[in-house]
Length: 301
Image (tube, rainbow, N blue to C red; front, side):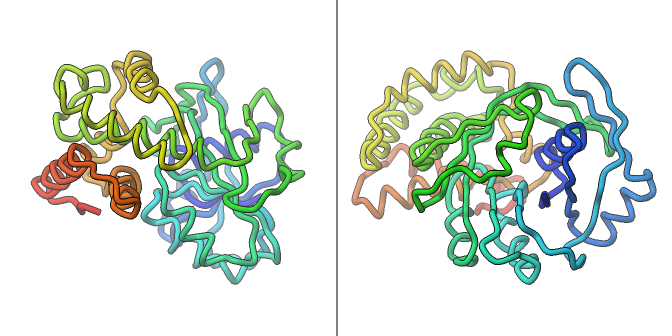
């Protein structure tokens, strides 16, 4: 099994596979990143929430020549396509590709680029962060809900080899409604935390009626996708449950990293335009988020 991307989520997969005794390779960005790990003897200090583990990771670069049968793509959405394309010569016929990206758009782009592979997409609720290079904390145990991106197919056999104690996964076919719900929740919270530079719990007070208008438009957009949910209730519950959390978009802003705004709110606005659905509150939110990013000299897409 190959994991693409040594960020928090990629490292979490690698650590759990190693603890489960399942053979894997974690693919890092380039030779320089590989050498950086090698200077630390490929060591990862993994805190699973109850115990600390000293793990020696199995690492390689995209230039390695081992065929890939299962690929877990744990990169950011905006780098996923280019990263997978680098690995295309190594992909075995009809290999499995599991996309773990936030938002929508990256999954479809990889599916178009890899028509001979089986594409799966996931919604992940695990929380993991890196307090320092070579360290990982599994801060919140969540669930991975996954399913086929388009074709009606059974779950791949390798999923059954993942021990439930380390991998809480749920097969969902079709998966798109799950991905759309998560996208809508992120649209309603993350951009506001970016604009107001606040934790999730402060969004209702800071955004006020603007949040209400966005939720109304997002519910209309979900109905266009065949999803009739009480999004308002769901979003406010998520805000209460994660009140002290800093969204990934806000964390990217503080770290000077490119955000995934274009794959979350940008995707929603493009879909609304395609459907002929007016969403002025969401369009205003997108424009305000882009202005905020410009002010911090970060990409707006």
